[in-house]
Amino acid sequence: MENRVALTARIAEAEPLRCTPAGLPAITLRLEHESRQIEAGAPREVRAAMKAIAFGAMAERLARKNIGSLWTFTGFLANPRNGKTAVLHIQDIQQN
Image 1 (cartoon, rainbow, N blue to C red):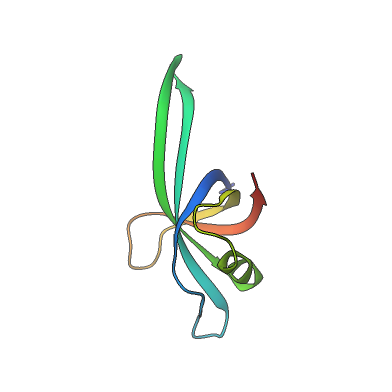
Image 2: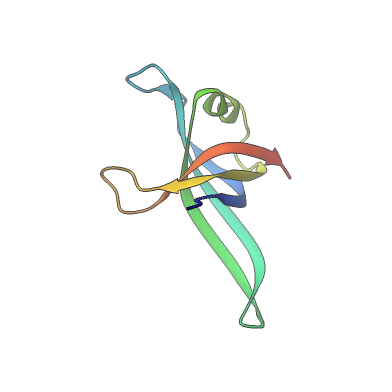
């Protein structure tokens, strides 16, 4: 099975870079997406916000990015142990 997501979005919020108990750098972001899509043959304005997380070198890289900057984020979705909403685990970013 495949679990792969690509989302073009702005960094709306970023928590400070932290370390996990194992010493791995981690960062939590809130991403905001806006686009125009075609659904059932009709145009539709789409807005979405989602929580995202990154670890290791990717977390360190994201900690240096500006709030409001636009990127294409790729990764996978997973539910946190204590949550019901899926979180995007960022594995790569490309500037838009």
